[in-house]
Image (cartoon, rainbow, N blue to C red):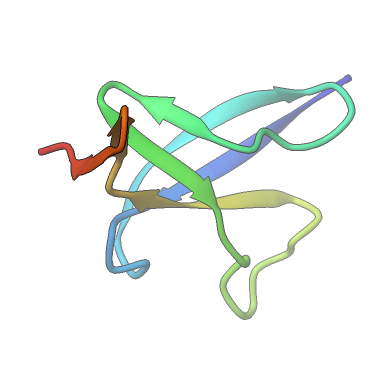
Length: 73
């Protein structure tokens, strides 16, 4: 188990919207929820040390209910 820093990028993948510390047991988290925002893994930006930091990009959440798919605001 180790602690790593995850940098959270906005929808455009250019602006950093936050940084959090995550605890990693076997593998990096597949998803980070920060409030109502969803972040998924993305490639580390060029020039960054991929061993020192994790990168996550914001995604718009989707909801699927009984044959219906909609985007949540």
